[in-house]
Length: 166
Figure 1 (spheres, rainbow, N blue to C red):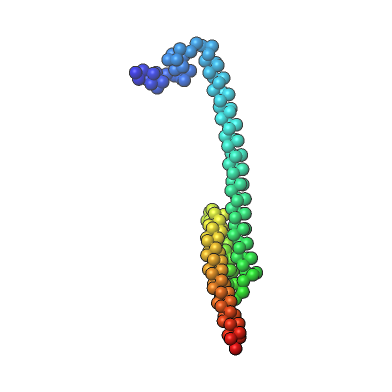
Figure 2 (cartoon, rainbow, N blue to C red):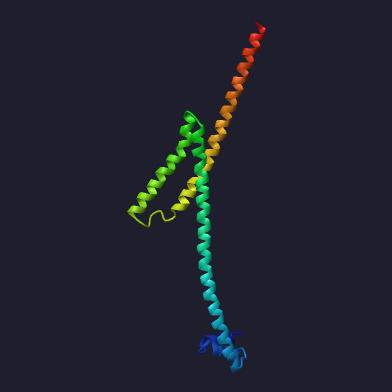
């Protein structure tokens, strides 16, 4: 049962194994060699194509990370332009965190080129946390504004009813 394994281990080459155990005729050994040569050439070509594919996917991922990060940074920038008072501080907070983190990344990279090697993903993490933060702040602001508007409408309705009563 394990005779083929014994022959494989003790044979001088794979060609000897193929001739003795697989009943290949001698002319077919050159065909097997040619086949192995063609397959190895295709493997090298496939490896080169794989490297090109890896470069392509790295580029695609970088574009996605950059686009999401820019879109995420646009949220607090737009809010900063539209909001007033304390809400402006809430809008500028994530931009200050981003500026601080970029400063840390730059200074760390200048000190040691091996630090923060995955800095694009650190920026992407900031973008995701910023999205959560901005949605929470916008939702809270909308609730506060809506409650204030209802209070103003109620006070105007009370004022108009008191004016009509007098």
